[in-house]
Length: 227
Ligand SMILES: [Zn+2]
Image 1 (cartoon, rainbow, N blue to C red):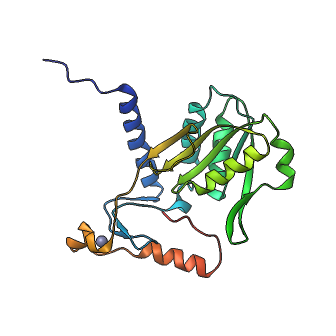
Image 2: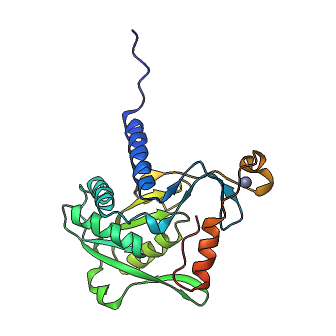
Image 3: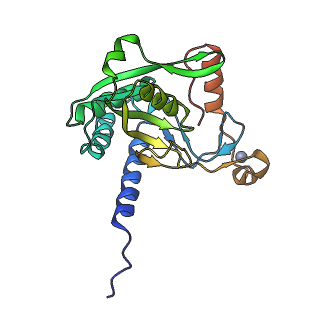
């Protein structure tokens, strides 16, 4: 029997890793596949991820955090920096598993002059100094705008970005060429309602996520990430 053509081992590993992590996210109820979902943008898609559910299972989050920490284990890290509740839970797990025993620091999101911004509580300022090595951690990266604000914030204080670790990112996200490690890198195919193949098949449209999002906005809790 002739040997099958060998795939690049790194690509195979990434593929396997991604399958495992998608399965984990499915078990938290966060990842929906084979659906027909209305997105906040009005586009339709077959996949959706509910950000708030991603970090609800401590043992999963710890396991995923350890994978991210292992990836960055060879680099010294002084500080793990994130923002948002889910990312902070994951940050703790990454920091706990990293051999440098970094501290965990978070920025707070807000609006200033109509623009989104991230600021660092003043108590944390002494932890981010010139030369401090920072690992950024995020749960889901959809546009990269929060991460870019965090990068800006850390660099303004003179810190160095050791890398960015996340659970999920859209492959199209640009983070200025910084080393990014994500457990899942995936873009959902999205369709305009006129061109949606799922509509054409007559599959009922799931508007649940948009409804939930509107409801949350109305009650002025926290702005959920548009995915
Ligand atoms: Zn559709």
